[in-house]
Image (tube, rainbow, N blue to C red; front, side, top):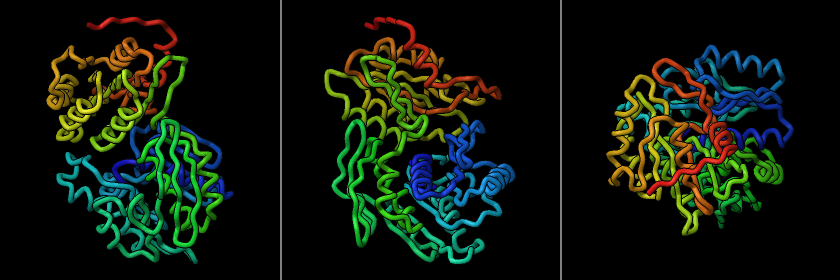
Length: 393
């Protein structure tokens, strides 16, 4: 659980378990796995209701999976979606501004995350299976999670903890760090870029240690990791600029995403971003998201995300409050997500970076009560398959 990094961490944990020879089930925002079968998550929900969740777990058992790796949201904990589940390992990635419309305050948001760790001491014990808490020591809320009772507590981080990522090097095509544990260490060349992916890898590697998986197996799994669909997914159709599709839709994740590609975009290359805000969700973060885009991007296209029953233009106006530029001066509002993407790709030139954020690998857009087929990656590939030229003065 955590605000950001959950899906990638789940994938990396699964990679480590599979490298160690285990058959694994996995449920995340992006996709589901039962053994060797992988399918997209089309439920528009990270943590499923307990009846569907139990059905998936039953299927995992029938397919002889030995481990289940599950992404858990604060909503899920508040709504008892993990009803009937016995948690053996709970992992906390981080906590940042999100979902305050639902929880009312950061304190209540934190408390909901803590419910997962409370289950460690309040669910059935399996023979010879310890209850383990794994906590990001670099997060300001680490101490809150350390108070929960567990047989073992592991603290990881780039700066704090007994399980550390030392001497990190961040590159456009990946990252390097030394994974140090109390009595050993190993070099890791992670094929995923960004500080936050090193943090996700540290969380997953610490899970591996807690499960007594040797460091060489952990290293091999992390070095062979593949990008999660829609998470900093790079699309290369031969265009002369970089193009990334990502799921980031909250202030912290947008900051990490935009700042990273700002640094990786060498002048005179421009950072161009396409994003929007979700309807019927935390409205307080909308102008903050606008501020973040203004801080890092040379070219902003503000568009629709999933408006649900909210007025899409009203959502855009709330985001635009954080963007002090005049429209037409490196800033455009385009309601149609397809046309917004088309505009960014049409004006991108060699050396630029285009980041399309908010929906990742999602295959549809929710407008009112209707689910409209819409996949940012498919839209990009379709547009890049045709020559489109637009001149903006």
